Image (cartoon, rainbow, N blue to C red; front, side, top):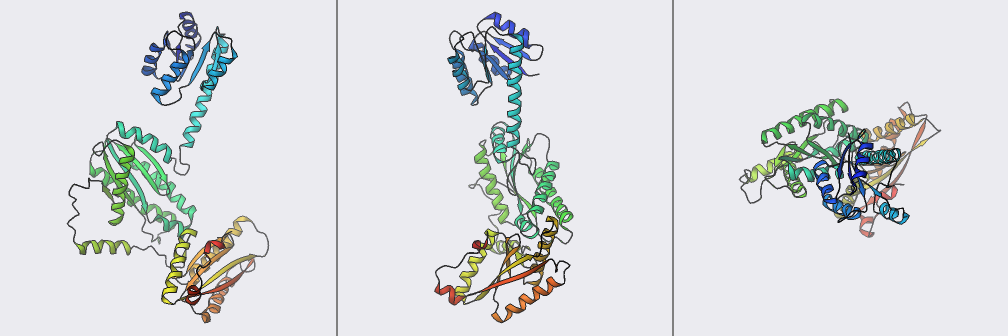
Length: 456
């Protein structure tokens, strides 16, 4: 049952309001602003029915004091016996939910109360939806950070920052739709690893933040992280096939609360530093933040151990056994690096623009399947060292390093032959535009065309 606080210095008004509202609401009454403030703190009502003209602190002053103390706009309906439209305008301008004149009719008072509470419920629901991440059902960044600022000040537990290892490879190799599905189902794995009452939110991309209340034992963190890593491998193989070789995993940075503080922003930075540390140490595990001035059990590691650790990280399979399909930003970075490399070491490369010319309109599903088939041909027929980027729905930009002009016709013929063997060969043609990149040209030109210019 919702709570209504009625504040008026006239006893009869309070009696009438309580009589009218008590059948539907829990009603509390006060004859002064001071008494009203005390009742508000004790009961935290859903709405305040407030007289403007009161001795001492009037209704407007009470509204200001209440909003300042709780740092939010409190739902208020003003009451007055003054017939002036000006004072009503002032009340509404100050953020009142509604305005009612005394004496009031029972049906009018009930109607105004019901309407105001209904509007507040809608606003509250919209606010909750805006604070929710649609893919996972968790709180989004703004929602979880607002919640955790309160939690860290009042609760004991552990704050953890979770990040998926090598997730970008999933998006590059299998597409963003598969990546989104993994994120969505990984969220279910997290739900199964925490308790009711723990706070969880998605910060964006493949990064999450979690607060486990009353958790003080490192072993509990170890159990959660191990379980998530094992379940994530099973999940991705179920979705992508048993031959999935991406070293996907979960890394976690953690900090105990309140032992490392109670300010969320400070605690998050500490947990994030611990996350960065486990990423450097080999991923797929957790690291608990420790004060930098305290001894660390890893400070005596030998140089050889450090070398072996870094080597293990670099030897993780991050390159697919086919031509690498990159997004625009990644491709641009590699492209610019290759230009510098060829200029310095007198290399040569070829740019290919492959366009799929469809003969006639076709259903969306058929068109998507046709383009996917072209993409697979490009991946399989080109070298592992070649790079590709999709620039339009029907167009791919390729960069083939260290290739001579005499080999270009053979590359084109190999791609055309592979296309002619498909069932879609009569539905579309593949056209090829090529352009050489040589170190002589790079040396003579200050700038080269960036591959982003091909994207429309």
